[in-house]
Length: 111
Image (cartoon, rainbow, N blue to C red; front, side, top):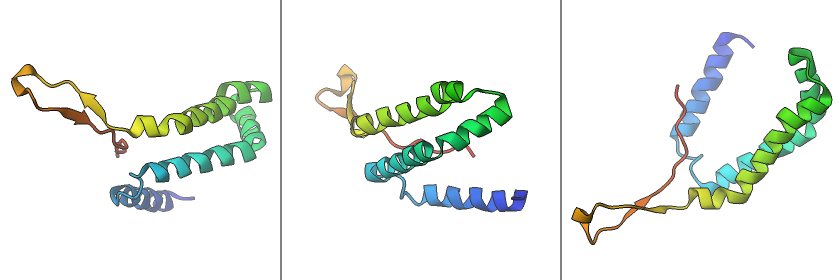
């Protein structure tokens, strides 16, 4: 893969993000589930790559890299709805009786 191909892929991903299709919680949940599935399916190959690149043993690779990531994805899947739910925000007394809400949104990439 050369730098032009990488540039095209990055540009396509930027356009996809800007389209707003990544915003719904259902999309994010499906993406996390796919990522977790791929990590589980390819954990041996990932461990081999970590051994070649960083000299990590298979046990260390799973414990410190692969297994940790799979566990974090599981945590995110379990709490994704709560993380995406709007929350009350404090309002100054001067704006009484108004109410404010904070609506979390996916973070934009820093390209």
